[in-house]
Image (cartoon, rainbow, N blue to C red; front, side):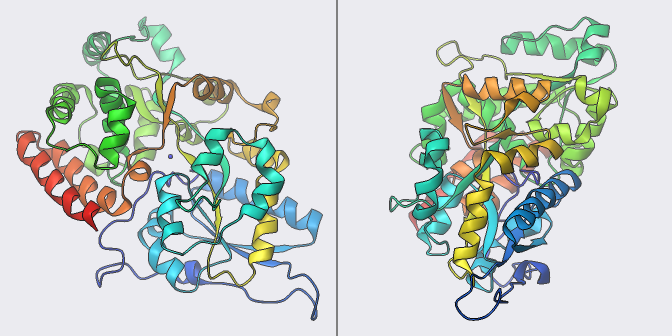
Length: 429
């Protein structure tokens, strides 16, 4: 969910409607200078980036600087706040886009490839394919069978906690939902918010729904629901919201007014006992505090499904269909697909796991090593609601629906009926 935490950010509103935000000037910037005279290779490439948080922004700049220095390129990064980037992505790609841009695997990639807004990069994959697993290859392939995406890293969603606090209080990792409830009650008695919670940006609560739905109804049902092959009024979905409603008193109050960074800081300050988020939460921890951070899988709800499904969104890069320098952009993506580039990036952003199978994991911190093993041991991997589902549905329906549920969970039937009605319309188009 990155790192920009973008996975994580959404196409809010009708993206092409009159109410859509204007594309930021920096996002629309695009270089077209030629590197030298006629016949010479154009080594000037522009890159639209949503890596706007301090840690990923610095890490990405250092990664591309290493490429520029070794290959003689000039890669200009146009960074835009990750939420604004996602909100304006369609208009951006239809207008005057950069040569390459940061984006997400799975449905989000296939959606824009199908719209004819991305350039196929099968020629890039001819040189990089051996270093990627079959799962990464599938996640990079459009509906037409062509490759459109280069995976850079991924990261797991789990319940994060501070080891020192748990040791001090004598807390044990809950294996089942009943144990989670018992632990939450103990934490409340100890003056803590048991589960940190934030949804000001609209996407984090989706992660909670994903965990509950996969644990209660299984991965297959969850993915079918995301594709609207199952109804949101199905009793199985209502059961998820009923359970979530019962767990809400264990969640940090006032979530709709809090950013994920603020909730992460509360975890760091030991005001909350645990926090369900992607491993990018580690961006808010440094030094000894980072060493004190650990995580565990969301506990079992139904033994039929266990805890084998893991949410691990993949972030990476694409080439714009309107790229002024597509060949140069492809050369940059070839580099970003390399173990060298991913090693460089992860030195500065220690919250993710490299996608290239040849990347050097020896430099991983304890959290990254655990994350790699956690993802590697997964039976199924989901991409996150705003990536597995239609992006318009995720942004215009699920953001307000979940925020409404957080504020008032008294009418679950009405909420699900509204979601289903809107889904029916959106998925029919």
